Amino acid sequence: MASPSAQLALDRGEPSFRIEQEAAARGTRLLLSGRFTFADAAPLWNELRARPRATKKRERIDLDMQGAEYVDGGAMALLAHFRAEIYRRGGRAEFVEASESVQEIVRLYRAD
Image (cartoon, rainbow, N blue to C red):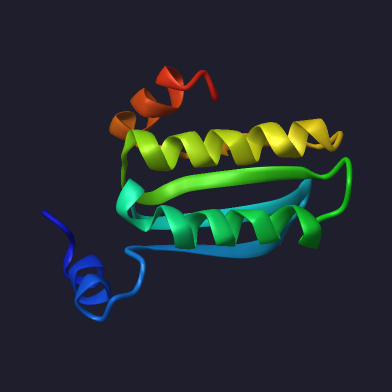
């Protein structure tokens, strides 16, 4: 069951997730919140594709999963690909602050 805010977003045709960016002591922190599902793959992919262009090469990016309520396999594949792209560019990206249920899928995709 979706949270009330996620359900409201679905009712308006908006993605059920949000990604915010903030500066961190060691680079950039992306704050991921809401539900990450394959149903929102297109907006998630567009959001992620724009991020490497907006960050410096060799930058560290923390993917803060504290606000992620749910992540399915399709969305995790996109997030893992994003992480691999950051590494390919010489940077470093790590999933941090994930709940135990979200951490399980991160481990399944060997993204920990």
